[in-house]
Length: 258
Image 1 (cartoon, rainbow, N blue to C red):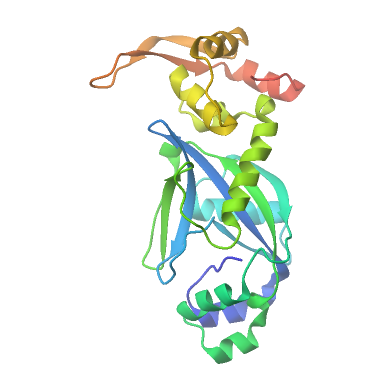
Image 2: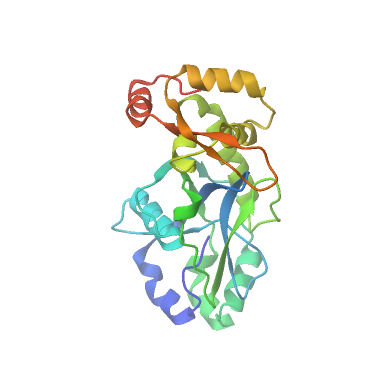
């Protein structure tokens, strides 16, 4: 469950507009400074971070609700977004935890009695999204903090959100050969080291540098540029870019990317 607004009256008045018993959560992945990251948010009055999520309007397609959630947290709409799982464990959320969160956001005990819609069992539709880190417009507010976290250094999240992230990664791992993960996460120019780190993080294992380079270049989807990346104190690295036509053809025709 996710709450859009800290104003209790606004929440109570809008509850009837949403589908009861179902919400959505988005695992938004980005890559920056050699690390694969996930975007999280936290209400200022609450202690735990959580995945960006929300409710679904009764007259709204669930995919449109996911796009709306993505836009509100990143400022982006044209990104790679896919539904991957329905989380329906009976104990996936705690009624006591939800009640505490609502009270901290301004609900009184009498509000909770009237608005038990928010305290019922919720199923959650899981989505994952690949975004280019530099294009995301993270804008925290007085009511809500939004920040990137390294995937290998996550705090204990609200409800089952750690599990949702793990499930997203395992799903991506199972489809890795046919997903445009590097294409979507990296800027137009990148190093092969950056691309390899993304695959290693998703796969949870190290890859041989030379074998990876040979395999990825043999696809013809990655083109070497006459430019290098030079960071102070480090050896310069060749820059590459994706051949967009070949990449899109591979996706369209089901040809393994890696």
